[in-house]
Length: 368
Image 1: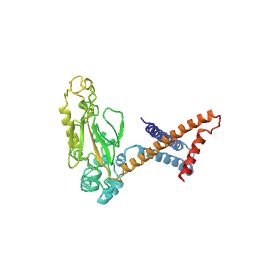
Image 2 (image 1 turned 90 degrees about the horizontal axis):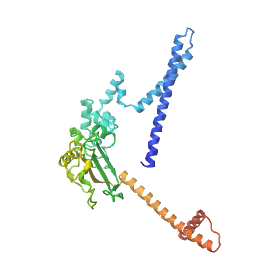
Image 3 (image 1 turned 30 degrees about the vertical axis):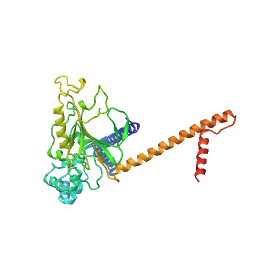
Image 4 (image 1 turned 90 degrees about the vertical axis):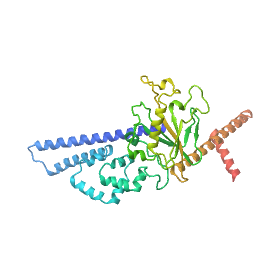
């Protein structure tokens, strides 16, 4: 794990702990307020309204703090279960306006939008008839801006397609080599894979009709190389084609999740008892190959795609850093030479920082 990701991981856990501590403080204050109210109720002495208001204010503030914590950490749909009837009627009046319903649904993540199909016929019809929502679900082969979108990532894979995941990036490793390369031009590398056929989160043998129609990315990729783990690498003889694909999957209209799932099942069946499999890949009881199927292809991006713009900025920063590093090494080498000459001639020489500043000043004078 990189230092940056480790720092982010620690920050997220620290934030979670801070939120939990605040919630526990609210709970303690609420308990104290309720206990004080109980004591006041049991007391025979008269209690002023100011004291009661102060205690009630403390209880209300603590309850509001707990409510905020639950809203931030719990699923929003759980709050709909306890809405009063009046609120439900008001919400339904909003949902009855097609434009407002579409706008509200467009704010949902992909997974929640898929679940919204099952709410009622009104919501189902709204999603089916909206070109914008169909684009959001990657059910249309076009996007409004034409920018790259990776739909099947994160939580949606775990709940909709266990064992399936996609990744994208501009860097790649060639086969067993550790040498990292950057894809040239406007293309981005897109990868998709299913977990091992014997993994706890093993891929499902089939999926729903709607999921099958979803394009694996936007704009839709039309061709991907297919790799089967048992034949992907030649562990005994490392040759130039050790990272060779076993097949190619194509769809001129764009590859869908159904295309990849069908190809995966096909390749798993073909390589169930593959002779190229290493011994450690065989199941102890059945002798079947514990395989994994993955896909790889490239997608061409628009010139102004945010991912491509970010890539160019990083490349420019990297180029400047390399240039500065090379220049500094040259200055250090010049300093070493000057220091040896000064020592031999018993002359003084400034320290490295002042020496480099002098060289930079001389370079500025020469350019001006």
